[in-house]
Length: 450
Image (cartoon, rainbow, N blue to C red; front, side, top):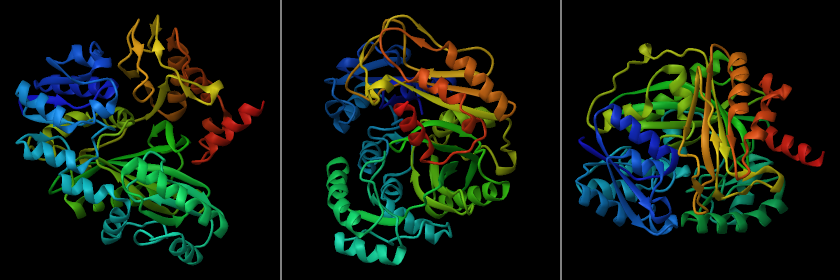
Protein backbone atom coordinates (compact mmCIF):
# COMPACT_ATOMS: atom_id res chain seq x y z
CA UNK A 1 0.00 0.00 0.00
CA UNK A 2 1.68 3.19 -1.21
CA UNK A 3 -1.10 5.74 -1.68
CA UNK A 4 -4.44 5.72 0.14
CA UNK A 5 -7.56 7.54 -1.02
CA UNK A 6 -9.86 8.46 1.87
CA UNK A 7 -13.42 8.31 0.59
CA UNK A 8 -14.90 10.46 3.32
CA UNK A 9 -14.83 13.88 4.96
CA UNK A 10 -14.84 15.56 8.38
CA UNK A 11 -13.19 14.20 11.49
CA UNK A 12 -12.94 10.61 10.26
CA UNK A 13 -11.08 11.68 7.12
CA UNK A 14 -8.65 13.64 9.29
CA UNK A 15 -8.26 10.62 11.57
CA UNK A 16 -7.50 8.22 8.70
CA UNK A 17 -5.04 10.59 7.03
CA UNK A 18 -3.07 10.90 10.28
CA UNK A 19 -2.94 7.12 10.76
CA UNK A 20 -1.71 6.64 7.20
CA UNK A 21 0.96 9.30 7.66
CA UNK A 22 2.20 7.48 10.79
CA UNK A 23 2.70 4.41 8.59
CA UNK A 24 4.44 6.32 5.80
CA UNK A 25 1.52 5.98 3.37
CA UNK A 26 0.74 8.88 1.03
CA UNK A 27 -2.84 10.11 1.11
CA UNK A 28 -5.46 11.47 -1.26
CA UNK A 29 -8.43 13.48 0.02
CA UNK A 30 -11.66 13.81 -1.89
CA UNK A 31 -13.91 16.81 -1.40
CA UNK A 32 -17.21 18.18 -2.51
CA UNK A 33 -17.44 21.81 -3.55
CA UNK A 34 -18.47 22.73 0.01
CA UNK A 35 -15.35 21.09 1.44
CA UNK A 36 -12.84 22.59 -0.98
CA UNK A 37 -10.67 24.07 1.79
CA UNK A 38 -11.60 21.72 4.65
CA UNK A 39 -8.93 20.49 7.04
CA UNK A 40 -8.78 16.98 5.59
CA UNK A 41 -7.97 18.36 2.13
CA UNK A 42 -4.99 20.29 3.51
CA UNK A 43 -3.63 17.45 5.63
CA UNK A 44 -3.58 15.01 2.70
CA UNK A 45 -0.76 14.95 0.17
CA UNK A 46 -3.25 15.42 -2.68
CA UNK A 47 -6.85 16.60 -2.88
CA UNK A 48 -9.42 16.07 -5.64
CA UNK A 49 -12.81 17.76 -5.96
CA UNK A 50 -15.34 15.08 -6.83
CA UNK A 51 -18.62 16.95 -7.27
CA UNK A 52 -21.16 19.46 -6.01
CA UNK A 53 -21.90 19.98 -2.32
CA UNK A 54 -24.76 17.48 -1.77
CA UNK A 55 -23.41 14.07 -0.76
CA UNK A 56 -25.62 12.37 -3.35
CA UNK A 57 -23.59 14.12 -6.06
CA UNK A 58 -20.14 13.73 -4.53
CA UNK A 59 -19.31 11.46 -1.57
CA UNK A 60 -21.92 8.89 -2.61
CA UNK A 61 -20.84 8.68 -6.25
CA UNK A 62 -18.71 5.56 -6.71
CA UNK A 63 -17.55 6.49 -10.21
CA UNK A 64 -16.28 9.89 -9.03
CA UNK A 65 -14.27 8.30 -6.24
CA UNK A 66 -12.77 5.66 -8.51
CA UNK A 67 -11.91 8.33 -11.08
CA UNK A 68 -10.09 10.31 -8.37
CA UNK A 69 -8.16 7.19 -7.40
CA UNK A 70 -7.13 6.59 -11.00
CA UNK A 71 -6.18 10.24 -11.54
CA UNK A 72 -3.92 10.31 -8.46
CA UNK A 73 -2.46 6.82 -8.70
CA UNK A 74 -3.98 5.65 -5.42
CA UNK A 75 -3.79 1.92 -4.86
CA UNK A 76 -6.13 1.65 -1.85
CA UNK A 77 -9.40 3.18 -0.61
CA UNK A 78 -10.54 3.66 2.99
CA UNK A 79 -14.29 4.36 3.26
CA UNK A 80 -14.36 5.65 6.87
CA UNK A 81 -17.86 5.42 8.36
CA UNK A 82 -21.18 6.46 6.84
CA UNK A 83 -21.52 7.31 3.14
CA UNK A 84 -20.35 4.23 1.15
CA UNK A 85 -18.62 2.40 4.00
CA UNK A 86 -21.14 -0.44 4.29
CA UNK A 87 -22.24 -0.70 0.67
CA UNK A 88 -21.17 -4.06 -0.65
CA UNK A 89 -21.37 -2.73 -4.21
CA UNK A 90 -18.78 -0.05 -3.41
CA UNK A 91 -16.33 -2.52 -1.87
CA UNK A 92 -16.74 -4.78 -4.89
CA UNK A 93 -16.30 -1.89 -7.34
CA UNK A 94 -13.07 -0.84 -5.60
CA UNK A 95 -11.72 -4.39 -5.81
CA UNK A 96 -12.83 -4.76 -9.45
CA UNK A 97 -10.88 -1.58 -10.26
CA UNK A 98 -7.73 -3.31 -9.03
CA UNK A 99 -7.58 -1.33 -5.77
CA UNK A 100 -7.36 -2.48 -2.17
CA UNK A 101 -10.53 -1.85 -0.17
CA UNK A 102 -9.74 -1.17 3.49
CA UNK A 103 -12.46 -3.33 4.98
CA UNK A 104 -14.07 -6.72 4.49
CA UNK A 105 -14.96 -8.10 1.08
CA UNK A 106 -18.18 -6.98 -0.54
CA UNK A 107 -19.67 -10.45 -0.04
CA UNK A 108 -19.10 -10.22 3.72
CA UNK A 109 -20.53 -6.70 3.90
CA UNK A 110 -23.60 -7.90 2.03
CA UNK A 111 -24.01 -10.92 4.27
CA UNK A 112 -23.58 -9.05 7.55
CA UNK A 113 -25.28 -5.83 6.41
CA UNK A 114 -28.60 -7.59 5.94
CA UNK A 115 -29.83 -7.95 9.50
CA UNK A 116 -31.89 -11.03 8.77
CA UNK A 117 -28.95 -12.80 7.13
CA UNK A 118 -26.65 -11.65 9.94
CA UNK A 119 -28.96 -13.20 12.53
CA UNK A 120 -28.75 -16.50 10.64
CA UNK A 121 -24.95 -16.29 10.68
CA UNK A 122 -25.05 -15.58 14.41
CA UNK A 123 -27.22 -18.61 15.06
CA UNK A 124 -24.85 -20.77 13.03
CA UNK A 125 -21.97 -19.53 15.19
CA UNK A 126 -23.89 -20.32 18.38
CA UNK A 127 -24.36 -16.64 19.25
CA UNK A 128 -27.60 -15.79 21.13
CA UNK A 129 -30.11 -13.74 19.14
CA UNK A 130 -33.24 -11.88 20.24
CA UNK A 131 -36.31 -14.10 19.90
CA UNK A 132 -38.13 -13.18 16.71
CA UNK A 133 -38.70 -14.11 13.09
CA UNK A 134 -35.89 -16.07 11.42
CA UNK A 135 -36.27 -13.98 8.27
CA UNK A 136 -38.27 -11.16 6.78
CA UNK A 137 -42.06 -11.11 7.11
CA UNK A 138 -44.11 -10.68 3.96
CA UNK A 139 -46.79 -8.31 5.23
CA UNK A 140 -48.64 -7.04 8.29
CA UNK A 141 -50.66 -10.27 8.61
CA UNK A 142 -47.48 -12.34 8.77
CA UNK A 143 -46.03 -9.92 11.33
CA UNK A 144 -49.13 -10.24 13.52
CA UNK A 145 -48.94 -14.04 13.36
CA UNK A 146 -45.27 -13.96 14.38
CA UNK A 147 -45.95 -11.54 17.23
CA UNK A 148 -48.49 -13.92 18.72
CA UNK A 149 -45.68 -16.40 19.22
CA UNK A 150 -43.03 -13.89 20.31
CA UNK A 151 -45.31 -11.89 22.61
CA UNK A 152 -45.68 -8.11 22.93
CA UNK A 153 -44.08 -5.61 22.99
CA UNK A 154 -42.21 -6.26 19.75
CA UNK A 155 -39.85 -4.26 17.57
CA UNK A 156 -40.24 -3.96 13.82
CA UNK A 157 -36.85 -3.53 12.16
CA UNK A 158 -35.69 -2.96 8.60
CA UNK A 159 -33.62 -5.90 7.32
CA UNK A 160 -31.30 -3.52 5.47
CA UNK A 161 -31.53 -0.81 8.12
CA UNK A 162 -29.27 1.23 10.29
CA UNK A 163 -29.14 4.56 12.10
CA UNK A 164 -32.53 4.04 13.75
CA UNK A 165 -34.54 4.26 10.52
CA UNK A 166 -37.29 1.81 9.71
CA UNK A 167 -37.73 0.84 13.38
CA UNK A 168 -40.98 0.84 15.36
CA UNK A 169 -41.78 -0.45 18.85
CA UNK A 170 -45.38 -1.65 19.13
CA UNK A 171 -47.39 -2.76 22.13
CA UNK A 172 -50.29 -4.64 20.56
CA UNK A 173 -51.79 -5.98 17.33
CA UNK A 174 -53.48 -2.73 16.36
CA UNK A 175 -50.21 -0.85 16.77
CA UNK A 176 -48.37 -3.45 14.72
CA UNK A 177 -50.80 -3.26 11.83
CA UNK A 178 -50.63 0.53 11.88
CA UNK A 179 -46.82 0.69 12.07
CA UNK A 180 -45.93 -1.98 9.54
CA UNK A 181 -46.65 -0.02 6.37
CA UNK A 182 -45.03 3.15 7.71
CA UNK A 183 -41.85 1.38 8.75
CA UNK A 184 -41.59 -0.58 5.51
CA UNK A 185 -42.07 2.58 3.42
CA UNK A 186 -39.44 4.42 5.46
CA UNK A 187 -37.00 1.53 5.00
CA UNK A 188 -37.66 1.42 1.25
CA UNK A 189 -36.92 5.13 0.91
CA UNK A 190 -33.81 5.01 3.11
CA UNK A 191 -32.24 1.73 1.97
CA UNK A 192 -33.99 0.70 -1.21
CA UNK A 193 -35.36 -2.37 0.59
CA UNK A 194 -38.64 -2.41 2.52
CA UNK A 195 -38.20 -5.90 4.01
CA UNK A 196 -39.09 -5.97 7.70
CA UNK A 197 -38.46 -8.49 10.42
CA UNK A 198 -39.70 -8.72 13.98
CA UNK A 199 -38.07 -9.37 17.34
CA UNK A 200 -38.97 -9.22 21.00
CA UNK A 201 -38.54 -5.77 22.51
CA UNK A 202 -36.32 -5.80 25.59
CA UNK A 203 -37.70 -2.92 27.63
CA UNK A 204 -34.73 -2.34 29.96
CA UNK A 205 -31.82 -3.02 27.65
CA UNK A 206 -28.24 -1.90 27.49
CA UNK A 207 -26.61 -1.46 24.10
CA UNK A 208 -23.14 -2.99 24.34
CA UNK A 209 -20.84 -3.56 21.39
CA UNK A 210 -17.65 -5.58 21.04
CA UNK A 211 -14.74 -4.26 18.98
CA UNK A 212 -13.10 -6.94 16.82
CA UNK A 213 -10.20 -7.27 14.41
CA UNK A 214 -9.87 -10.08 11.91
CA UNK A 215 -7.40 -11.02 9.19
CA UNK A 216 -9.57 -13.59 7.43
CA UNK A 217 -8.12 -16.57 9.23
CA UNK A 218 -8.25 -15.47 12.85
CA UNK A 219 -9.97 -12.83 14.95
CA UNK A 220 -9.55 -11.10 18.32
CA UNK A 221 -11.65 -8.77 20.44
CA UNK A 222 -10.60 -5.51 22.05
CA UNK A 223 -13.23 -5.64 24.78
CA UNK A 224 -16.55 -3.83 24.70
CA UNK A 225 -18.12 -0.38 24.69
CA UNK A 226 -21.22 0.86 26.47
CA UNK A 227 -23.50 2.71 24.02
CA UNK A 228 -26.81 2.93 25.88
CA UNK A 229 -27.02 6.72 26.11
CA UNK A 230 -28.91 7.35 22.89
CA UNK A 231 -31.35 9.84 21.44
CA UNK A 232 -33.63 8.62 18.65
CA UNK A 233 -31.44 5.52 18.52
CA UNK A 234 -28.38 7.65 17.78
CA UNK A 235 -25.49 7.28 20.22
CA UNK A 236 -24.58 10.38 22.23
CA UNK A 237 -22.07 9.14 24.84
CA UNK A 238 -20.01 5.95 24.70
CA UNK A 239 -17.69 4.28 27.20
CA UNK A 240 -15.01 1.61 27.20
CA UNK A 241 -15.55 -0.64 28.95
CA UNK A 242 -19.21 -1.09 29.95
CA UNK A 243 -19.85 -0.24 33.61
CA UNK A 244 -23.14 -2.12 33.59
CA UNK A 245 -22.26 -5.74 32.86
CA UNK A 246 -20.61 -8.48 34.91
CA UNK A 247 -17.23 -10.01 34.18
CA UNK A 248 -18.99 -13.26 33.26
CA UNK A 249 -21.22 -11.47 30.75
CA UNK A 250 -18.19 -9.64 29.32
CA UNK A 251 -16.31 -12.90 28.81
CA UNK A 252 -19.27 -14.64 27.19
CA UNK A 253 -20.10 -11.69 24.94
CA UNK A 254 -16.56 -11.10 23.70
CA UNK A 255 -16.16 -14.82 23.01
CA UNK A 256 -19.41 -14.80 21.03
CA UNK A 257 -18.22 -11.83 18.96
CA UNK A 258 -14.98 -13.58 18.04
CA UNK A 259 -16.87 -16.78 17.17
CA UNK A 260 -19.08 -14.77 14.81
CA UNK A 261 -16.04 -13.24 13.08
CA UNK A 262 -14.48 -16.64 12.59
CA UNK A 263 -17.75 -17.96 11.17
CA UNK A 264 -17.59 -15.45 8.28
CA UNK A 265 -13.79 -15.22 7.94
CA UNK A 266 -13.93 -11.56 8.87
CA UNK A 267 -11.22 -9.16 7.70
CA UNK A 268 -10.53 -5.65 9.09
CA UNK A 269 -12.02 -3.83 12.08
CA UNK A 270 -15.66 -4.40 12.90
CA UNK A 271 -18.15 -4.15 15.72
CA UNK A 272 -20.56 -6.80 16.95
CA UNK A 273 -23.52 -5.21 18.69
CA UNK A 274 -25.59 -6.73 21.46
CA UNK A 275 -28.58 -5.94 23.62
CA UNK A 276 -28.16 -6.86 27.27
CA UNK A 277 -31.31 -7.40 29.31
CA UNK A 278 -30.71 -5.22 32.37
CA UNK A 279 -33.05 -7.39 34.42
CA UNK A 280 -31.84 -10.90 33.59
CA UNK A 281 -28.30 -10.25 32.32
CA UNK A 282 -29.03 -12.14 29.08
CA UNK A 283 -27.38 -10.78 25.96
CA UNK A 284 -28.51 -11.03 22.33
CA UNK A 285 -26.81 -10.30 19.01
CA UNK A 286 -28.51 -7.51 17.08
CA UNK A 287 -26.18 -6.58 14.20
CA UNK A 288 -22.62 -6.21 12.98
CA UNK A 289 -21.08 -3.00 11.67
CA UNK A 290 -18.49 -3.87 9.04
CA UNK A 291 -16.50 -0.63 9.35
CA UNK A 292 -14.69 1.59 11.81
CA UNK A 293 -17.09 3.09 14.36
CA UNK A 294 -17.48 6.71 15.42
CA UNK A 295 -16.68 5.67 19.00
CA UNK A 296 -13.51 3.70 18.23
CA UNK A 297 -11.22 6.14 20.15
CA UNK A 298 -12.52 4.88 23.50
CA UNK A 299 -11.19 1.41 22.70
CA UNK A 300 -7.90 2.87 21.52
CA UNK A 301 -7.42 4.71 24.81
CA UNK A 302 -8.00 1.65 27.00
CA UNK A 303 -5.97 -0.78 24.85
CA UNK A 304 -3.27 1.43 23.34
CA UNK A 305 -3.98 -0.03 19.88
CA UNK A 306 -4.52 2.23 16.85
CA UNK A 307 -7.50 0.61 15.16
CA UNK A 308 -7.21 2.55 11.90
CA UNK A 309 -3.53 1.66 11.58
CA UNK A 310 -4.43 -1.99 12.14
CA UNK A 311 -7.08 -1.74 9.42
CA UNK A 312 -4.43 -0.48 7.01
CA UNK A 313 -1.94 -3.19 7.96
CA UNK A 314 -4.52 -5.94 7.53
CA UNK A 315 -5.69 -4.53 4.20
CA UNK A 316 -2.06 -4.52 3.04
CA UNK A 317 -1.91 -8.26 3.69
CA UNK A 318 -0.33 -8.42 7.14
CA UNK A 319 -1.67 -10.96 9.65
CA UNK A 320 -3.02 -9.88 13.03
CA UNK A 321 -0.19 -8.49 15.13
CA UNK A 322 -1.81 -9.30 18.47
CA UNK A 323 -2.87 -12.59 19.97
CA UNK A 324 -5.79 -12.35 22.39
CA UNK A 325 -3.62 -12.79 25.47
CA UNK A 326 -1.52 -9.77 24.48
CA UNK A 327 -4.49 -7.38 24.38
CA UNK A 328 -4.96 -5.78 27.77
CA UNK A 329 -7.22 -3.02 28.96
CA UNK A 330 -6.27 -0.26 31.34
CA UNK A 331 -8.49 2.36 32.88
CA UNK A 332 -11.72 3.79 31.53
CA UNK A 333 -12.51 6.03 28.53
CA UNK A 334 -15.61 8.08 27.68
CA UNK A 335 -16.51 9.78 24.39
CA UNK A 336 -18.90 12.71 23.96
CA UNK A 337 -20.27 13.60 20.52
CA UNK A 338 -20.46 17.37 20.11
CA UNK A 339 -22.94 18.33 17.38
CA UNK A 340 -23.92 21.60 15.72
CA UNK A 341 -27.46 21.29 17.02
CA UNK A 342 -29.69 23.41 19.25
CA UNK A 343 -31.10 21.37 22.17
CA UNK A 344 -33.67 24.13 22.85
CA UNK A 345 -35.09 23.68 19.33
CA UNK A 346 -35.52 19.91 19.35
CA UNK A 347 -31.87 19.45 18.28
CA UNK A 348 -32.33 21.23 14.99
CA UNK A 349 -29.03 21.26 13.02
CA UNK A 350 -27.28 24.63 13.09
CA UNK A 351 -25.07 25.12 10.03
CA UNK A 352 -23.23 28.36 9.50
CA UNK A 353 -19.97 30.18 10.13
CA UNK A 354 -18.16 29.77 13.44
CA UNK A 355 -15.84 32.27 15.07
CA UNK A 356 -13.36 31.68 17.83
CA UNK A 357 -13.08 28.14 19.16
CA UNK A 358 -11.35 26.52 22.13
CA UNK A 359 -10.77 22.79 21.89
CA UNK A 360 -10.19 20.78 25.07
CA UNK A 361 -6.67 19.48 25.58
CA UNK A 362 -4.26 18.55 28.36
CA UNK A 363 -3.50 15.24 30.06
CA UNK A 364 -5.56 12.28 28.87
CA UNK A 365 -7.94 14.34 26.71
CA UNK A 366 -8.32 13.68 23.00
CA UNK A 367 -10.41 15.78 20.62
CA UNK A 368 -11.05 14.34 17.16
CA UNK A 369 -12.40 17.11 14.96
CA UNK A 370 -12.31 18.90 11.62
CA UNK A 371 -13.25 22.18 13.26
CA UNK A 372 -11.03 25.25 12.94
CA UNK A 373 -11.46 28.94 13.87
CA UNK A 374 -13.50 30.84 11.28
CA UNK A 375 -14.62 27.63 9.58
CA UNK A 376 -18.18 27.11 8.36
CA UNK A 377 -20.46 24.18 9.16
CA UNK A 378 -22.03 23.12 5.84
CA UNK A 379 -25.75 22.26 5.77
CA UNK A 380 -25.32 19.16 3.61
CA UNK A 381 -23.86 16.59 6.03
CA UNK A 382 -24.08 15.13 9.51
CA UNK A 383 -23.85 17.78 12.22
CA UNK A 384 -20.97 16.16 14.14
CA UNK A 385 -18.35 18.79 15.04
CA UNK A 386 -16.04 16.86 17.31
CA UNK A 387 -15.58 13.88 19.60
CA UNK A 388 -14.24 14.70 23.05
CA UNK A 389 -12.64 11.57 24.47
CA UNK A 390 -11.21 11.34 27.98
CA UNK A 391 -9.31 8.63 29.85
CA UNK A 392 -9.01 7.96 33.57
CA UNK A 393 -7.48 5.29 35.74
CA UNK A 394 -11.09 4.44 36.65
CA UNK A 395 -14.56 5.66 35.71
CA UNK A 396 -14.74 8.28 38.46
CA UNK A 397 -11.52 9.86 37.25
CA UNK A 398 -12.77 9.78 33.65
CA UNK A 399 -15.98 11.57 34.68
CA UNK A 400 -14.00 14.21 36.58
CA UNK A 401 -11.80 14.77 33.52
CA UNK A 402 -14.96 14.97 31.39
CA UNK A 403 -16.12 17.98 33.38
CA UNK A 404 -12.90 19.84 32.80
CA UNK A 405 -12.73 18.94 29.08
CA UNK A 406 -16.33 19.92 28.32
CA UNK A 407 -15.93 23.17 30.28
CA UNK A 408 -13.01 24.06 28.01
CA UNK A 409 -14.86 23.40 24.74
CA UNK A 410 -16.27 26.59 23.26
CA UNK A 411 -17.52 27.45 19.76
CA UNK A 412 -18.60 30.98 18.91
CA UNK A 413 -21.25 31.65 16.31
CA UNK A 414 -23.55 28.62 16.43
CA UNK A 415 -25.37 26.58 19.11
CA UNK A 416 -23.87 23.20 20.01
CA UNK A 417 -24.69 20.31 22.32
CA UNK A 418 -21.60 20.77 24.52
CA UNK A 419 -23.57 22.48 27.32
CA UNK A 420 -26.09 19.67 27.42
CA UNK A 421 -23.31 17.09 27.59
CA UNK A 422 -21.70 18.97 30.47
CA UNK A 423 -25.01 18.99 32.32
CA UNK A 424 -25.41 15.29 31.68
CA UNK A 425 -22.09 14.41 33.33
CA UNK A 426 -23.33 15.77 36.68
CA UNK A 427 -26.48 13.65 36.73
CA UNK A 428 -26.36 11.16 39.65
CA UNK A 429 -27.69 8.35 37.49
CA UNK A 430 -24.81 8.85 35.05
CA UNK A 431 -22.30 8.68 37.89
CA UNK A 432 -23.94 5.48 39.11
CA UNK A 433 -24.13 4.04 35.56
CA UNK A 434 -27.82 3.41 36.24
CA UNK A 435 -29.23 3.71 32.75
CA UNK A 436 -30.53 1.79 29.73
CA UNK A 437 -31.28 2.66 26.10
CA UNK A 438 -34.39 4.67 27.01
CA UNK A 439 -32.96 6.66 29.92
CA UNK A 440 -31.49 9.60 28.01
CA UNK A 441 -34.70 10.31 26.12
CA UNK A 442 -36.66 10.15 29.38
CA UNK A 443 -34.24 12.64 30.93
CA UNK A 444 -34.48 14.97 27.94
CA UNK A 445 -38.28 14.87 28.08
CA UNK A 446 -38.30 15.66 31.81
CA UNK A 447 -35.72 18.41 31.30
CA UNK A 448 -37.86 19.97 28.55
CA UNK A 449 -40.91 20.03 30.81
CA UNK A 450 -39.04 21.96 33.49
